[in-house]
Image (cartoon, rainbow, N blue to C red; front, top):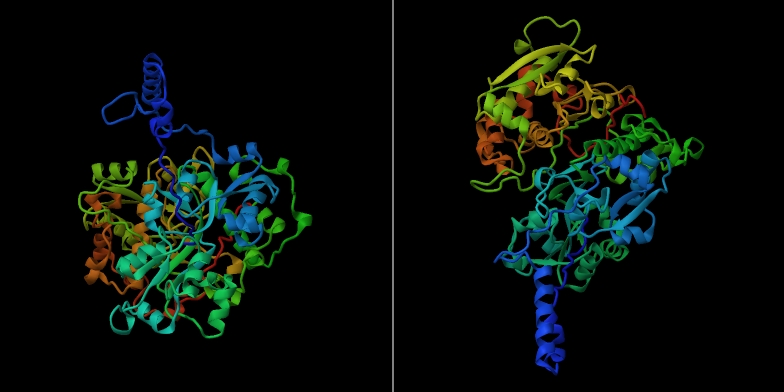
Length: 593
């Protein structure tokens, strides 16, 4: 996370405390009595929600119920939550990301307003609709997707626009101490500067006592604390390290070193409210368009930029997403840094794409209430089974439950989901098969015949929906990538769910991601107890990920069951763990850019 300082509001001072001298010098008893009565009436009217009772608590703020797209287009500008420093500079990657959204939604890249937010206020600002999206360098975690800790609400995250990671920088000896989690001997003086309310702090709080930490409000302040000796080690994201010239100079002249170990994953994404999936999808496809432009070699071209708000559509599926590229630039045109320095942020050409986002704190503790209630999950638990649709090729023959290759893998993921929901029972699933030449499978999912759909390629038209019978879908992280070249359109195969149940969509995504997490952490089937608990979905399924991996095993175990154990990893293309190589891969099967 790139977060700013905490803001504290002063407690209001009572009327008597501020004016006691006036009351003390009041001359007449009658006047004093009248003033006292007036004060009491005013106090009761303003503070009727005391523990002793009183006035009925005021209701929550009311919000415009219309879709965000409609509100933004009527308002005439996008409200982007950003740091005050970003707004003041008026330039840079985050400004360009906001301009890209404005170019698509309003047809004019300059139709935006930067709203200053802080590390503490930003989530509440977004939830209360003071901003339309956050462009703040926020790390996507499952915890934040389901229940962000400061608001208790979940949020939607775009495709990451920057795959980053936390490293240590500072005094050489003490950086090595921090990397090794050592605090004795030569490491006794270790003091790490970090930002509160950040993923960096969440990580350090599990590894170091409070006495080993020092806190600063902004990155600039923390870098200054390091230079002054208030701390001797600083946490920083790799792509941000060179933004502070004095820190850069200190590393270059050998005063400080940059650590060798990436301590955390930091997939940075644009953030929107999860209560308006249409707008979240729009923001996500803006990022996709920027990546598409980069992959296709399409660049900023103002002759193709309409630069006029009257040309935009209020139908999300009809928006011209290439406005982001033609009006602002492709991904690397607007990226602040040398792409050769950050290999994960380059276009993938066929190497490993398997990468799990961080879970965060998804274990609420014993007996914890779920973050929210999923109607789909409740229905499935009550009925004792769920229905999974499997898309198969036109010429497919045979029993899908006995298939191998991609069809078999798709079936295996349905069984893995069954195990997650039914304490390890992988047989609580009914299968229906569909061909991939028509939309009957999508219709069956949107009308409730299916609970989950697998085996089909992700497509933009299904993300937004185009009619009552083809409503928008949510797609998990892909469990299989095609071997096509990026320019020819790579197939992304995910578990699809209805978009109207965001918690169930997150649960399904979490199960898919668990198989990749297990692979990253060398957790095979027999070590499934090492998977995290996820009581954030409800304590009754807190063991869901352990149950899932107890059935399926890690990603490689699933792959071997369906494609054979003799397939060399070099022949698996993108279906291997990412080793630090390129992760940017756009959906090229966009129906309308």
